[in-house]
Image (tube, each protein chain N blue to C red):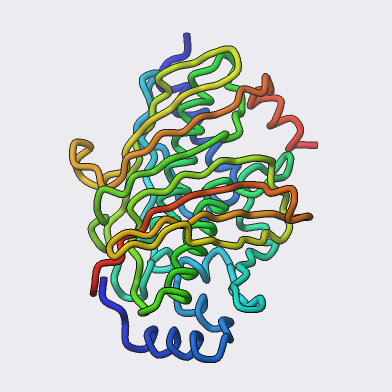
Length: 153
Length: 149
């Protein structure tokens, strides 16, 4: 059994190894075997319309896909990397302008071939999300450490 | 969200001239991922050029699935702005994407089809491909609100 500290360190290394997640400034904020919270800072380059301070829904999709993928990965023995099969996001409202956003994600069912995940995007309060999503991921049997070895080559 | 006056001018001009090249420069997120829009006959073709910054898996290597989703979502919104009877800013209600293949670090193309446009809601289907249109990397569907501004 991995401790929450070990899980957080795995998620951090994984996130930092993904160029686009690094560019958007994603960081793990809270990681346990129950799920992950990933934060993403406000950045004017991500705005939908210039000057509004509101992050475009596409960047929210990227945050949620990443957080869902992390929750799938840490739910599997040996931390398998899982490509997304599908993703569905409901935009319940707009995020508040000029503020960081976060995504809570959990893997709620793991089968031999797929991992089912769900989660919400929010700012201050997880009970007041501005987006809700579900994502399905494919198991590959390839672990993160194998991926890290290939990267080091 | 208000339709910014300078953006509205560019949008109206793009609709009048079928030159869509300046639209994405005015939308920060579109600019960030590097996407572009061009006319293709009476239609629009969206392009996400090869960009190492959009990498999601450095080992394969593959494009980040979220960026592909964001690109397709933005394509659908711009498509509506260009082809609706009256130019409005569509607001996303929900978005669903199916990933069919791993997308490589090379250009991605997308085209959109308005399946249904009611007075309040539009349903748009988006297909994205890389090497051949017949082998899409992803298909997506989005609902947008079309309330008056």
